[in-house]
Amino acid sequence: MSPLADRYGRRFPYLRLSVIPACNFRCTYCLPHGYHADPHAAQPLSLAEIARLLRGFAELGMHKLRITGGEPSVRHDLTEVLRTAAAAPGVTKLAMTTNGSLLSRRLHEWMDAGLNAINVSVDSLDRANFARITGHDRLDDILHGVDMALGAGMASVKLNAVLLRGVNDGELPAWLDYLRERRIGLRFIELMQTGDNLAFFRDRHVRAELLETQLLESGWQLLPRAADAGPAREYRHADYAGRIGIIAPYSKDFCSGCNRLRVTATGDLRLCLFGEFGIPLRPLLQADEQLEDLVRAIGGQIGRKEQGHFLHEGRTGITPHLASTGG
Image 1 (cartoon, rainbow, N blue to C red):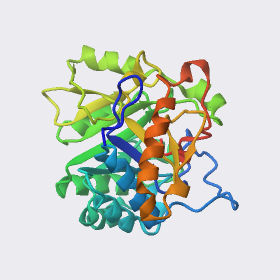
Image 2 (cartoon, one colour):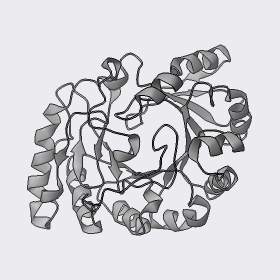
Image 3 (cartoon, one colour):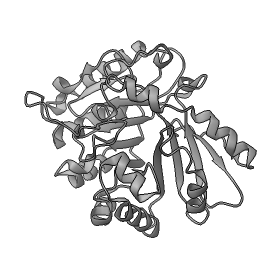
């Protein structure tokens, strides 16, 4: 089977799979009132369904997989999910995005299961500010887990920080001190409008390109983008061990390098984080004999992928908040 490609020539070796919509944090930009389960919602995909899903995507050239949530560590069988994912044919990079709340306790267990890359959400290096943003005073423990991952030799350790105007957008000096000796990739993410955060977005949105200008003026240099990389524009500086990435979804041509698809915790294929529809794959995950039908279904839907999102027009699709689709 040929690698998955859309009508604009973009290829998709990268899948982001949500394994649970729930999250145990209350981040101001995502779930300020905490997660509230829908009692009528379907249960997340089972291990067997996940295994079949990944076999289908592997047939279409997927080799990079990121496990997301909600918060994936809320799922009680996460270690088995990771082991199942690591065993999928063709997967060479198994990453996970987490808030790090269980990182210091479960890191080695997850690495033994096959996890080789991790992104940890750390929106501030100031303990009080971190608690205000997330609703939890857990910064010290989370940063300890990050240092453990570095010490354990994990192939890729990255941090994610959502830029919030008047909250954490003045912390670049502290971050530079942190990156001087740590071989970490820091991702500054521009706040995105979702279905339920319009007032917050208008109040706190700051263009990530302003930060890029500061970096360039300070001698940071833009790096070439890897074929299976995420959406960040990555910068390096000779004086720092760490690197800085900028994810600016409102920038020109942001979607031209899109290389990833998403599947929700209940098995809906999302061609775009801010798309207008989901494509239910779960009915095709009930038996091994359905693999060809699954591959055909995924390949047949890729033509519906738009050239770009419509965030500039204020259209956020069916994404109420980032936890619902995995960000």
